[in-house]
Image (cartoon, rainbow, N blue to C red):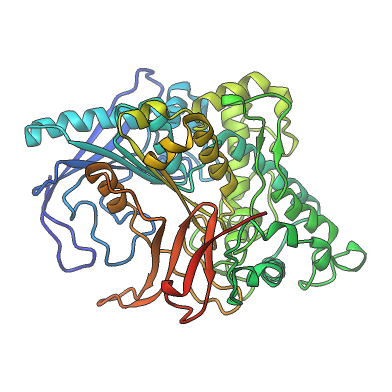
Length: 513
């Protein structure tokens, strides 16, 4: 289908041909793999494959802006890239809203979700480009965040000859461990440990009070992320006697919930690549504005990223309420019921991985993207750019940091310097945005990672040690409102004086425990 250029909106889109297709399953009980390939009339000879999100199941059209893009950043299509997306081999619309992991009951659909579908649609797309353009792409990139970030890493690990560059933002690297870690986060909430919006706000302010100025500036933003954890002692906001009396403090059960989030989740046996634990979450940005099923406020306060991911807008329910329950409980209980026990009636509160060791290890091998050996990918010139958001409460940023360090230990620091970068956006939540705990003002978090990747791959020009994140007006002329450096790990933006809204007023300094 031919789609005419649209220059009436920003970002504009060019003339392109939209191809919708499907790959039939081998198992007749499995669902097909849907995909969309967009072929611009003016092609730069390259293709960007978009990653998915969550459990997938919705067709990624690959016609939208990349995540973290500024409002005036041109679309990949507008830059001349062919673009590609998929639903990874199942359709979420076939399942109830509280049973979105049901596809995990089918072996082929689970493997397609884990890794297989992304290469399948890429291979079909290349064949179609050869017909349409008379040649295949000169460069193939994978760009994704969260689940899509995991997909990108999985491609580098499993199919190193298929991709030239990968952008992996907040990747859910140890996905099976991540999903399972959601269960102990929810368990205390069934026993009085649920935090309402007011208590989340109290927690966020307490963390900010202890860690905000470690970056040289009192602005309600925690930038010095590695120095913060040792300064947070929850006894400082414990209600008298540990009993819930008001939103100004946390009861002992509520402290148990927060403590569970900030405690590693360990196993008595190894999962894929020998890993035996999932790391704790980081501190800061707990009250950053977010949404849950279209709801943006609760209890007279903006709905926070902690409410979305950890606590929900009401205490959790065993059967899972897809509207009010936290995303962690939705995903965690679905993982246990459909991926591991394969019993839709299983009470996820009682889950013990030791009772399902063989299945846990099997699923880990399918969906975890934790293999640190990227030698083959790097040897053929592949480039990797990762980004972690420290205010992420969907997954632990330490998982991605630990993975990056494991890759460095495997391939050597010289190879890493030539081939990989990890940047840290200290205050950003899982989706990218961030806001000051003090006044609610938006923090600069927008950045283009496609152009730096392309210059690195095609021209051998490595990305700068600090990339500039921006905050811009959402309407033309998209005036710059603020900027701040996004530093390479383990550095963070430290304020040194001048206009706090300008990146030049910060230097990248080492963050240390």
